Image (cartoon, rainbow, N blue to C red; front, side):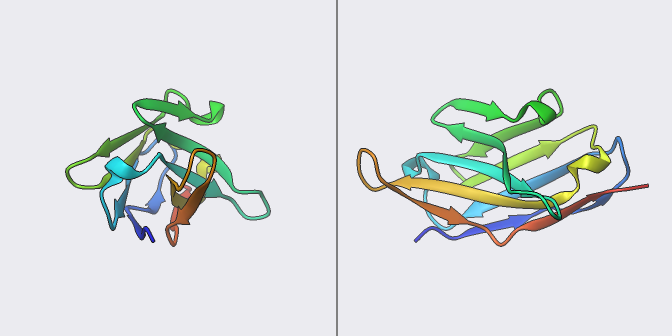
Length: 119
């Protein structure tokens, strides 16, 4: 069981920045993929950014504005969000996929942190 705890959400004006952090309860070296999802009211949860091994991936709408990074020594995964837009407003969730076999794995979620972009 991997426990994930997010921090860093809040209210920011358009064009501003926020940094989200996700702390895992165990070493992230053994986790196949870690990432950030978000869910806005009335919308489906979407993948924002992920790290699989050393490869990072982003949804098109955040490319060039958001950066995902990890610190294996601290067991944290951060999401630096710059040039925030009102449409970035959502609850952001940390996610971990830990493999249990070649084609199987368990998904773990944090409790979510609210990000609101508004003037």
